[in-house]
Length: 106
Image (cartoon, rainbow, N blue to C red; front, side, top):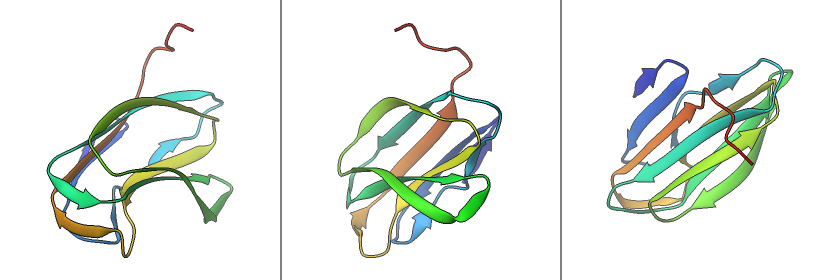
């Protein structure tokens, strides 16, 4: 796994494998980019947890193909991306989460 300034990247080749949590702790909202690419058969899940309740993890999206997407979340959260148990069949799933420095125009 690669951790860039505030972002995470990982090549996934098995089930139950996720990036480290990307921490978005300051007052939000926070904008981020998400990338999924590669040749794979898997369900890729994006998860979120609140900084004050790290035991409760919520799935906020699931993808089955390559995609590039921007997202927005509240402050005080952590976000990660990966493949849950039972959701991997074959190939390499490349995933990346990166914080955005600028707020996109409406």
